[in-house]
Image 1 (cartoon, rainbow, N blue to C red):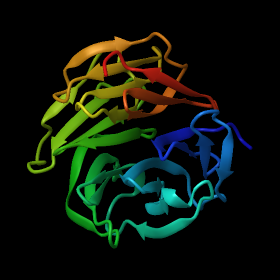
Image 2 (cartoon, helix red, strand yellow):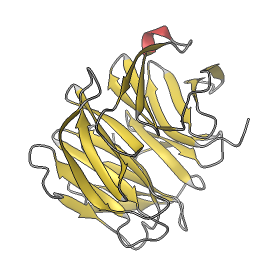
Image 3 (cartoon, rainbow, N blue to C red):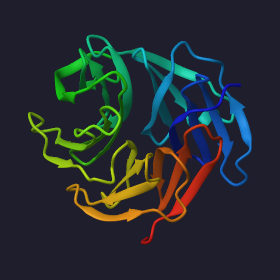
Amino acid sequence: NEVPWYTGIVVVSNKIFVIDGFNRTVRIHGFQDGRLLHESDELESPLMAVCLVNDHEIAVILYNGLIKIMSTHDTPVIRWSRDLRVRGGLDGYRGVVSFKGDLVVCGVRENTMCWCMVSSNDGRVVGTIHQICKVKSRSLSFITAKHNMIYISCDVDFLDNNNGVYAYDVQDPSKYKYIYKHKDLKTPRGITVDRHGSLFVCNAYPYDCIHHLTSECQLVSIITQGIPRDPEAIFCDDGLLYITSLGSKHITIYRTQYP
């Protein structure tokens, strides 16, 4: 295997699901001991993000716009229950999140980072494709959602001034509702939201840290203690943060400071 690039992580049914962007596989690890329970066959395009669709399904989005959905009831064996292909959407996909029965995806179209709603029935784009900002050759974005808000962590280009977190109210998405930029959030990576609506955003370089924000994108604190090098993807479950690191098979579990 090549060096892993764990671009996404979710925890459900006492199992940890990680996706490996480089090796194009999904891996299931045991919740208690972390051992590998199963690995999928290699898929046709790099795996960019994973999300919970509901309490028994997860969705994985590939760079080429294919969304593969699997039931968590079939684990520890990976069986894909259905595929969707995003139609009329973006040029290259980066993130996916479940939103009120449908999916929201983000990615690049004509050198612009964008997001749009996608039908979970047939993959068709619903409504407008919303532009976030111009991007350069190398760009990443990660997405999460809570209530009526979606939050997109955007790394436009290395140390670019547009790097940050962009938040939209899906009922009025014509403009950003909030933007968070910070001198120490130079390379934004994974983003997750807890049950209170607090956000946690990874920063990979030059400071390995996590920015803890309110749901209005105000800074609460910057967490540095115990954060792995080059944090990449993050998932919050029951007061715990599950964090992957670039080039590592190690998963860091971090307990937040409040219940």
